[in-house]
Image 1 (tube, helix red, strand yellow):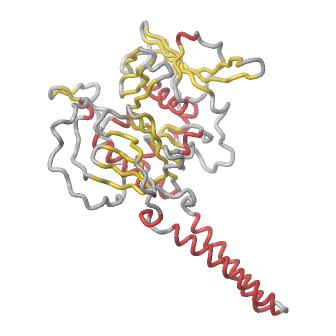
Image 2 (cartoon, rainbow, N blue to C red):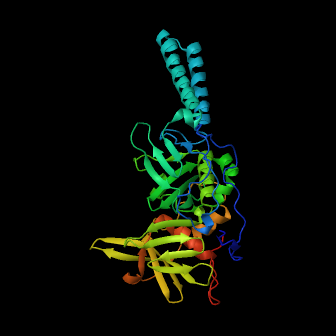
Length: 386
């Protein structure tokens, strides 16, 4: 992530700007016109968010219905309708009883027609299938329901915010975790084979987490999942990164004590301490367990970090002892293998309570990934590799 200050660039930070995430046509926004210029009363951004391009006053991103099948579902329904039609024809020609020859074939034909009709409805563009979705109105990202209720504010784009991309090991589902002073919101999308190839740039930016994570459901503040099509998610991320080019390398949350917990490119803040990810540091992943009462044992994962006199342990519950990969076909990519190794840790004794900082377990792999890219002291050269 590049930074600019008073027209000069830090040579350690100057990197090429990532390519757009949306590789194909974007969903057109409503006819709303373009603002003439950025408002003068906007608060100043950090240097890495200074490059802001003008955008339509309103952009719409349709959410998919809960009942909408994943890609390929309509095709499977068309295939199932064929044997139903064949069975109807056979019964109509070969059955002896008049009732069987008339009623049963009609029922089978009606079932086949229902499957075809349902598949056709789900092939309609998202704008015709649902009017629940996300609206980027000026500098606010809103979740609007199908009714006339008040929209939910997910993000204020004029303020500092982060976008953390998370994916399943097969990268068939991606969640964009939005973090800002407004809180945390998540937006999901399902990817089939063709869409994984089309949006490979987006998927490569995502950290892999365990498939059983509840957070991958991307439940919105209205209690329903926020699921976009791959093209709509890529288009939304393109717009957010145009407004804040450094947002994909950042998250901003608070820990259980109300202190800042954030990752911002070259800097990690946790427990009131600041770690420079461009300077040598030590870290390791481990697991530990503690008794909760007389009958319950909780298993935690921890990430120990030390740089100079600063030392902290990030902790959260362990989602699973091992990622569930049974039944998955084909090899994992190198990035997924590396992230799966970052999930592993050796058993250790519980760390001191005063060093612990509780984190959302969805953020543990992105944190470890950033730490894994930081330089090590001369005596510590271990890195997670695919």
